[in-house]
Image (cartoon, rainbow, N blue to C red; front, side):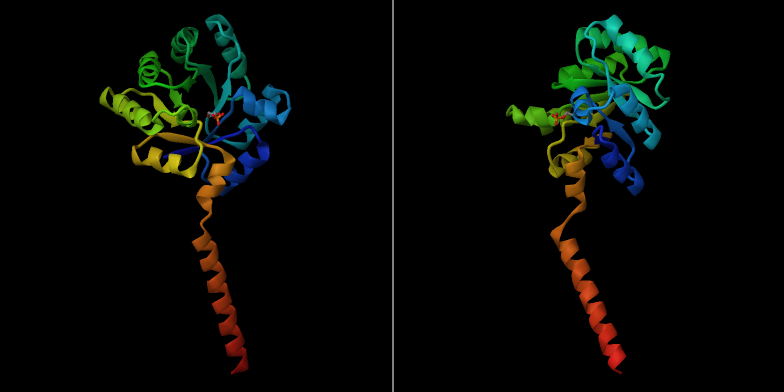
Length: 219
Ligand code: G3P
């Protein structure tokens, strides 16, 4: 499973890039707004840190606006992926951009039908927002499972990104069903690393080691 980090924060990206387990980054207008820096500049800095795909989202709502924005965004770096909201105009933009070799990530996806349409349109990535589905009381795991089934049956080239991840369990459930990518917020990645039993074990081993050193010195 590939790990993307869902953030526009440079420190968070650097930390996981240095760990060597990061395959890419996803941003959105809200995440970029949190950083308070000119978005194109920030995306350029992110692309300098990671080699993998970095998603930057278009703002325009019309196909032509999306396509024009995409053509500007790809000038930032060769690893930029264009995040496009799932709308009719968005799907038309995907159909224009993908044949030009511009990779797209169809975002704000909430149903299996939307996954099927985005896959048919040839999107490189499709991002079902499982956390927001869960928040609205829907079964986000079934939605993801059925989406994966559709992609596999027809052997669509699109890769599914489990997005809007709320907790470490979401990553496990996504991995169990073979979801290609999970885009994980920094806080959830931190939780995936930690286990009280690991910390307890490290401390106990160290304590016993020091006890042995003291005993050996006395001999
Ligand atoms: O990758 C999708 C993500 O950016 C949206 O997540 O937490 O705002 O639902 P969230």
